[in-house]
Image (cartoon, rainbow, N blue to C red; front, side, top):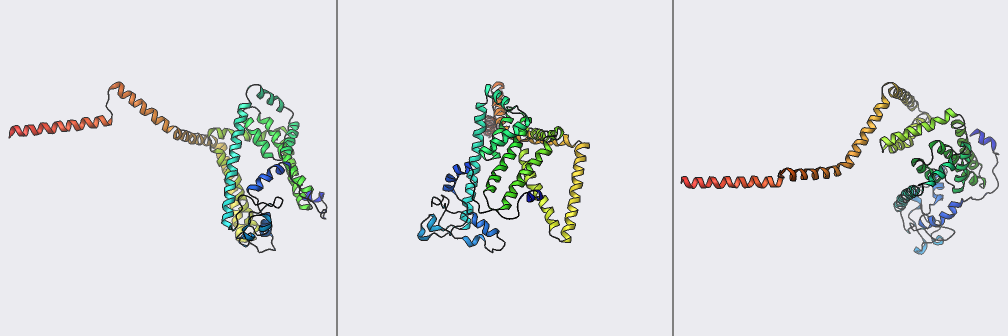
Length: 384
């Protein structure tokens, strides 16, 4: 923070402009026809000097009931109309309430996730069909370059597509198929992390706010310092690669491990750290004591977990537990097929040995009972 602040002037720049990336220029017209978020409502609610809430922007009221930019200007909630085209998106609704916009946003999020999953599945399937034979060897040789050149390659690709997620999600399946080694993928990913900072830098350079440029520079230097720590020194370079291999082995043993990893590392751990920081930031003695006690418990728990993992066969126990969970999962999935197979085998054995099934046995028992009953009746008649 202090380094980036020292690099920039204290006074604001002249009036700037808004930068739009090339991909956004292509995608935005279609996206604005589906849904367009009203960013002004976020700024109004986040303003500490304003007492506005979301309820103040509802219900949506367009003049004469006409849904376009001129008739609905300034009278919308979370979804607004496009100023350039003058049209309102498909999910815009005159008279909409806050719950209506929430439903529209949820539906768009669901559709976006479905489309993303379909695209990723299609991408992996296409790569598997394409990367057969000589093409696999060509890509392997093309990516088998010096690590620092691989960083430049990953950075350049990310700058072109304006997204590190596209770069990594495209290259990750290649690692899974064995086309690219982890050692080759590592510098490509680091370069992609650098390339994704250029989007924020270009947007901040055309802005008139120093805070925006300082944030973009902080993002850039954060990634640069991370690379300087984890890549140039061979020993440090092997640490994240080894962790990635172990996570891959855990995923191979138990397929639900990535879900647990994401929940723990992206929700549980950050939530715990935020809660601890809140205890010390409130200035209350009670919360400070509680935070200190929790920190002691966490440190003790981490130390005991390390001791259990190294000296109490914790590693073997965890692997056995993951294998047992995966076996149960596989057994549940294969249970219907196994039942059909067993039924077919039992039927075949009955036909081979002449054994009767339950229905035929029941009929024989009823016939035997009826025969016994008739014999008893005949004996009673003879006695009479």
